[in-house]
Length: 125
Image 1 (cartoon, rainbow, N blue to C red):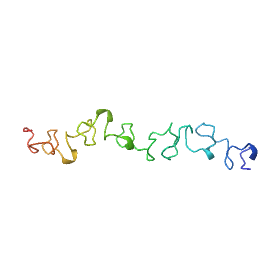
Image 2 (cartoon, rainbow, N blue to C red):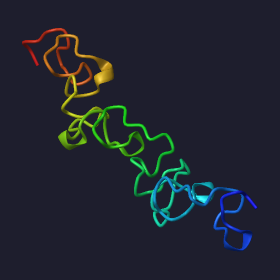
Image 3 (cartoon, one colour):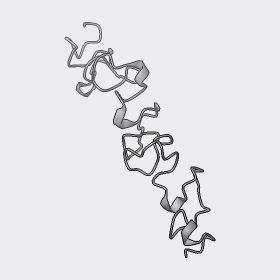
Image 4 (cartoon, rainbow, N blue to C red):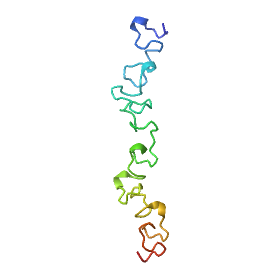
């Protein structure tokens, strides 16, 4: 007996209190594989069922740029809806310049040094 008030023959989750079910899925917490609806698998093994997991394919559940798309699935840093027209991994809404941001924009004309024919002259591109 596990002192949950249910005899062994009627015990759903032996060794745990059958009355505790934090996510309301009718599976006692002690035997629940994930928080949420167990019919939605916990693909990434983070303890959250797919119906409640903000990042179902990443155990880290991180969204560094706050755009609602988990880092593991994020196309670019920033708002993915803005796109990444220059393909540098930085979304256009936060992109410093057209081209590879890592190369910089020495003349601050919006064209990265890797694409700027005159990287130190803002008037001649």
